[in-house]
Length: 98
Image (cartoon, rainbow, N blue to C red; front, side, top):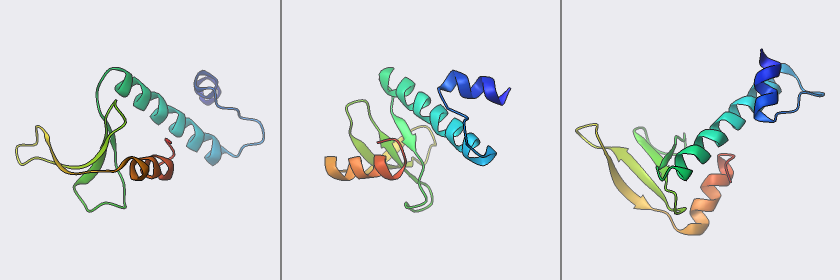
């Protein structure tokens, strides 16, 4: 089963340990989800330990990245900051989606 999943995601298995294979499968799945969300015109949430609890990055299809937190009604986000383009690029790189 793992081999079929890896093949469908384009992940090579040669010379990899099981943990590395699983990491690559997870990374490929996140990239596919990101591409799907952004191409559908929807934002993609990037959860990060570098932000305070309750905050996340939200990447928009136009490339803008904002720091957000869930609103009090839990139905939307409150934008706390919009990152400059070089900072947004650095966030993507640190999270393996750059």
